[in-house]
Length: 130
Image (cartoon, rainbow, N blue to C red; front, side):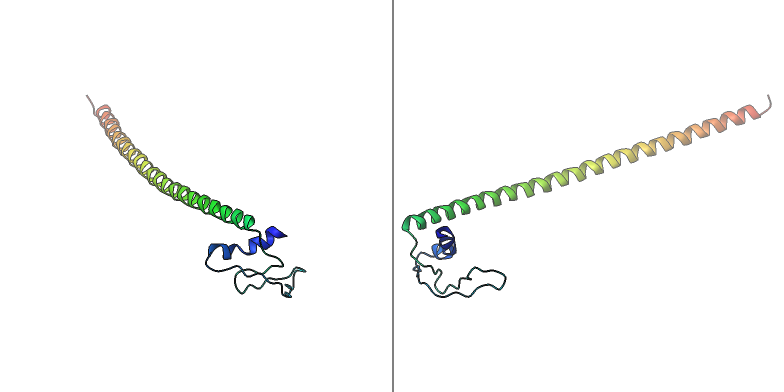
């Protein structure tokens, strides 16, 4: 429960100039829940003050989460750049292979036509009387 109360105050921790005001007030409940819904005026409301060591711990945890977030964003950016490079490379390789196969196909068509002409020429030679 203490950690839950402390977690509600995380926004107040981000702004140390704004004092944490703790007071207990009757709280309305959420229609789908039996737990009270907190309404914060100055960042946090709680039955008792949060211990300074808890505040330090939460600030350290917040900074750790921010560092991890920054690292993960950088990693995501590198992965996106690598993905783009790999996609470009794959497209270039595909185009190269397509062009290579098209050239080979054209060469085979020319060879086929040449062989067909040779066969026709040989047939005409065989058809002519000696």
